Image 1 (spheres, rainbow, N blue to C red):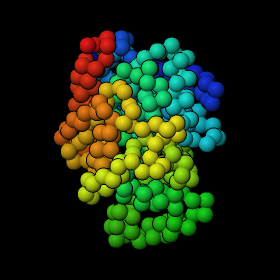
Image 2: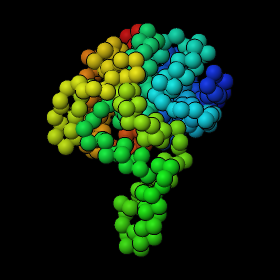
Image 3: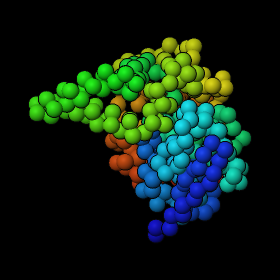
Image 4: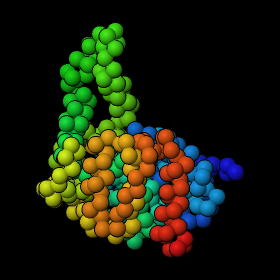
Length: 294
């Protein structure tokens, strides 16, 4: 049975937050992917809502939440999440996150360990992975205020369409998406590299082509000196067996957390392709790792 979705809005110190919620019981807060909003979790919570109180906020600057002209960072999103939970009088929650949402969830759990019962993460950002630097550099150049790279891309796009150069056309569409998502773009690309690295919470430099690690490196702990090796909450990492090498490397970096477990599932982009499998994994984790479900 599909339960009705309730929408909410509340004004916090930094701006107005919009969220969806459904169900009753033990609270689960689900944080959306980098280029998305809380609505992407609806297919998952449809299978969880009869047993849990599921809340799906749009992070500040995303979706239907306010988009104030601020300097966006993971630290800002963590503080907004803490203020939002306080306003809703939710003292302890389980967090589920994907992409930047996973980065925010893990950073929140490190800063507010007393408020988190457990975490389930997919394709988590926020760790220093060798090989990912090219993605950051490419994003910064394509989103630069001096749009030379973007101008060149638009110049060759008609030829690419004529000749069927799919990689060029996909890149052009990706840049359009980035430009429609200024908060996400700033968190990932449009900040000084030293600031981005200062918010990393993973200390292993993992080469996605080899899987080798070189241990903690400078600039690999979060803004508050956080590191995944200090994470006390139980952590489940969901990984598709066909995910990219970069995502696989990011997940391996997250296994620095002492209570981390990896569950490998068929496919890739699990939230979009297998929401029912994701929901079952979340339910099993909740049953085994939260006080009210133990």
